[in-house]
Amino acid sequence: MRFYIRISCLALFLAMACGATQIRATEDSDEQTSTATLTILPAFRLQITDQVVSETLSANPGVDTAFNAGFIELTIDKPTLAVSANKGWKLTVKSSGFTGPYAKAIGDLQLKDAGSEHVTMFAFTSLSATGQEMATDSAGVSNESHPCQYKILLDWTKDIPGTYEAIVIYTISTSGRK
Image 1 (cartoon, helix red, strand yellow):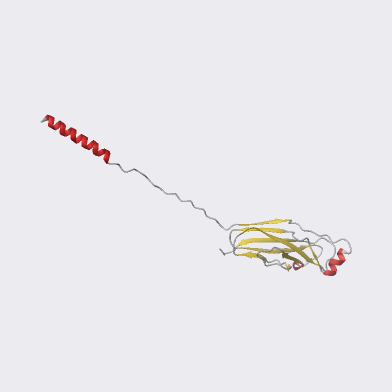
Image 2 (cartoon, one colour):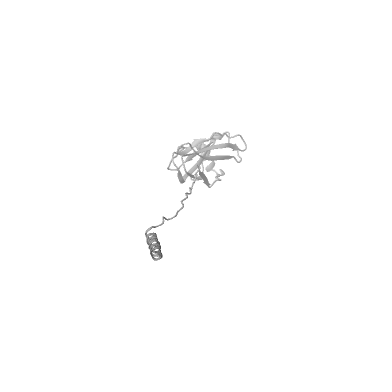
Protein backbone atom coordinates (compact mmCIF):
# COMPACT_ATOMS: atom_id res chain seq x y z
CA MET A 1 0.00 0.00 0.00
CA ARG A 2 2.86 2.25 0.66
CA PHE A 3 4.05 1.68 -2.80
CA TYR A 4 0.65 2.56 -4.16
CA ILE A 5 0.46 5.77 -2.08
CA ARG A 6 3.92 6.77 -3.24
CA ILE A 7 3.02 6.16 -6.86
CA SER A 8 -0.24 8.05 -6.36
CA CYS A 9 1.60 10.96 -4.76
CA LEU A 10 4.20 10.88 -7.53
CA ALA A 11 1.46 10.74 -10.15
CA LEU A 12 -0.34 13.65 -8.47
CA PHE A 13 2.90 15.62 -8.30
CA LEU A 14 3.66 14.93 -11.99
CA ALA A 15 0.12 15.82 -12.96
CA MET A 16 0.41 19.10 -11.10
CA ALA A 17 3.81 19.79 -12.60
CA CYS A 18 2.61 19.02 -16.11
CA GLY A 19 -0.53 21.01 -15.61
CA ALA A 20 1.45 23.94 -14.28
CA THR A 21 3.33 24.18 -17.53
CA GLN A 22 0.04 24.43 -19.35
CA ILE A 23 -1.39 27.04 -17.00
CA ARG A 24 -0.01 30.45 -17.83
CA ALA A 25 -0.03 33.29 -15.41
CA THR A 26 -1.47 36.55 -16.74
CA GLU A 27 1.04 39.36 -17.17
CA ASP A 28 1.04 42.05 -14.56
CA SER A 29 0.80 45.68 -15.67
CA ASP A 30 0.06 49.10 -14.30
CA GLU A 31 -1.10 51.96 -16.48
CA GLN A 32 -1.15 55.66 -15.64
CA THR A 33 -1.82 58.71 -17.79
CA SER A 34 -0.24 62.13 -18.12
CA THR A 35 -1.70 65.25 -19.70
CA ALA A 36 0.34 67.85 -21.57
CA THR A 37 -1.38 71.23 -21.56
CA LEU A 38 -0.37 74.36 -23.44
CA THR A 39 -2.34 77.56 -22.95
CA ILE A 40 -1.69 80.20 -25.59
CA LEU A 41 -2.83 83.68 -24.73
CA PRO A 42 -3.33 86.46 -27.25
CA ALA A 43 0.09 87.62 -28.41
CA PHE A 44 1.19 90.47 -30.61
CA ARG A 45 4.32 92.36 -31.58
CA LEU A 46 4.85 95.74 -33.21
CA GLN A 47 8.28 96.66 -34.52
CA ILE A 48 9.18 100.06 -35.96
CA THR A 49 12.05 100.66 -38.36
CA ASP A 50 13.27 104.22 -39.01
CA GLN A 51 11.43 105.70 -36.04
CA VAL A 52 12.92 109.16 -36.41
CA VAL A 53 11.88 110.96 -39.57
CA SER A 54 12.98 114.53 -40.18
CA GLU A 55 13.16 117.13 -42.91
CA THR A 56 14.73 120.57 -43.00
CA LEU A 57 13.26 123.32 -45.14
CA SER A 58 16.19 125.63 -45.66
CA ALA A 59 16.83 126.66 -49.22
CA ASN A 60 14.75 128.24 -51.93
CA PRO A 61 13.10 126.99 -54.07
CA GLY A 62 12.41 124.07 -51.65
CA VAL A 63 10.81 126.31 -49.03
CA ASP A 64 8.76 128.22 -51.63
CA THR A 65 7.62 125.01 -53.30
CA ALA A 66 6.53 123.41 -50.01
CA PHE A 67 4.76 126.51 -48.64
CA ASN A 68 3.08 127.24 -51.98
CA ALA A 69 1.83 123.64 -52.12
CA GLY A 70 0.67 123.94 -48.50
CA PHE A 71 2.52 120.81 -47.34
CA ILE A 72 5.69 118.78 -47.36
CA GLU A 73 5.75 115.00 -47.70
CA LEU A 74 8.48 113.32 -45.68
CA THR A 75 10.44 110.28 -46.84
CA ILE A 76 8.25 107.39 -47.94
CA ASP A 77 8.60 104.08 -46.02
CA LYS A 78 9.70 105.94 -42.89
CA PRO A 79 8.70 104.67 -40.49
CA THR A 80 7.90 101.10 -41.48
CA LEU A 81 5.87 99.00 -39.05
CA ALA A 82 5.96 95.20 -38.81
CA VAL A 83 2.88 93.61 -37.25
CA SER A 84 2.64 90.10 -35.81
CA ALA A 85 -0.38 88.70 -33.96
CA ASN A 86 -1.80 85.24 -33.27
CA LYS A 87 -5.45 86.30 -33.59
CA GLY A 88 -7.56 89.15 -34.92
CA TRP A 89 -5.80 92.49 -34.41
CA LYS A 90 -6.08 96.22 -34.88
CA LEU A 91 -3.36 98.84 -35.39
CA THR A 92 -4.16 102.38 -34.26
CA VAL A 93 -2.26 105.65 -34.37
CA LYS A 94 -2.46 108.95 -32.50
CA SER A 95 -0.23 111.95 -31.87
CA SER A 96 0.58 114.08 -28.88
CA GLY A 97 0.74 117.12 -31.14
CA PHE A 98 3.56 119.45 -32.08
CA THR A 99 6.01 121.25 -29.88
CA GLY A 100 7.64 124.29 -31.44
CA PRO A 101 7.67 128.05 -31.72
CA TYR A 102 3.89 128.20 -32.11
CA ALA A 103 1.03 125.84 -31.29
CA LYS A 104 0.79 123.97 -34.59
CA ALA A 105 -2.41 121.93 -34.84
CA ILE A 106 -2.18 118.14 -34.37
CA GLY A 107 -4.15 117.73 -37.61
CA ASP A 108 -1.32 119.41 -39.54
CA LEU A 109 0.46 116.06 -39.23
CA GLN A 110 -0.95 113.53 -41.64
CA LEU A 111 -0.15 109.87 -42.18
CA LYS A 112 -0.79 107.25 -44.81
CA ASP A 113 -0.08 103.54 -44.72
CA ALA A 114 1.38 102.45 -48.06
CA GLY A 115 1.09 98.76 -47.12
CA SER A 116 -0.79 96.41 -49.38
CA GLU A 117 -2.69 94.33 -46.84
CA HIS A 118 -5.36 95.05 -44.24
CA VAL A 119 -4.88 98.84 -44.52
CA THR A 120 -7.67 101.24 -43.61
CA MET A 121 -5.59 104.46 -43.69
CA PHE A 122 -4.43 104.27 -47.31
CA ALA A 123 -4.70 108.03 -48.02
CA PHE A 124 -3.16 110.86 -46.02
CA THR A 125 -5.26 111.32 -42.88
CA SER A 126 -4.88 114.05 -40.26
CA LEU A 127 -3.82 112.62 -36.92
CA SER A 128 -5.50 113.43 -33.63
CA ALA A 129 -4.97 112.85 -29.92
CA THR A 130 -7.43 109.94 -30.13
CA GLY A 131 -6.37 106.61 -31.63
CA GLN A 132 -7.47 106.10 -35.22
CA GLU A 133 -7.57 102.71 -36.92
CA MET A 134 -4.96 102.38 -39.64
CA ALA A 135 -5.00 98.61 -40.27
CA THR A 136 -6.97 95.60 -39.06
CA ASP A 137 -7.56 91.91 -39.76
CA SER A 138 -9.70 89.16 -38.28
CA ALA A 139 -6.87 86.60 -38.37
CA GLY A 140 -3.28 86.34 -37.22
CA VAL A 141 -0.32 87.65 -39.24
CA SER A 142 3.45 87.34 -39.14
CA ASN A 143 5.67 90.37 -39.79
CA GLU A 144 3.12 92.09 -42.01
CA SER A 145 4.77 95.26 -43.36
CA HIS A 146 3.18 98.70 -43.10
CA PRO A 147 5.42 101.28 -44.76
CA CYS A 148 4.17 104.70 -43.72
CA GLN A 149 4.66 108.28 -44.85
CA TYR A 150 4.12 111.56 -43.03
CA LYS A 151 2.85 114.76 -44.58
CA ILE A 152 2.97 118.08 -42.71
CA LEU A 153 0.63 120.89 -43.68
CA LEU A 154 2.26 124.32 -44.01
CA ASP A 155 0.94 127.87 -43.80
CA TRP A 156 2.98 130.96 -44.75
CA THR A 157 1.24 133.03 -42.06
CA LYS A 158 1.54 130.61 -39.12
CA ASP A 159 4.61 128.41 -39.55
CA ILE A 160 7.36 130.67 -38.26
CA PRO A 161 11.00 129.53 -38.30
CA GLY A 162 11.90 126.96 -35.69
CA THR A 163 11.84 123.23 -35.02
CA TYR A 164 8.47 121.49 -34.80
CA GLU A 165 8.32 117.98 -33.42
CA ALA A 166 5.40 115.62 -32.89
CA ILE A 167 5.34 112.27 -31.15
CA VAL A 168 3.34 109.60 -32.96
CA ILE A 169 2.08 106.63 -30.95
CA TYR A 170 1.28 103.34 -32.69
CA THR A 171 -0.68 100.71 -30.77
CA ILE A 172 -1.43 97.11 -31.73
CA SER A 173 -4.10 95.21 -29.87
CA THR A 174 -5.82 91.90 -30.36
CA SER A 175 -9.52 92.04 -30.87
CA GLY A 176 -12.27 89.75 -29.65
CA ARG A 177 -12.25 87.97 -33.00
CA LYS A 178 -10.90 84.44 -33.49
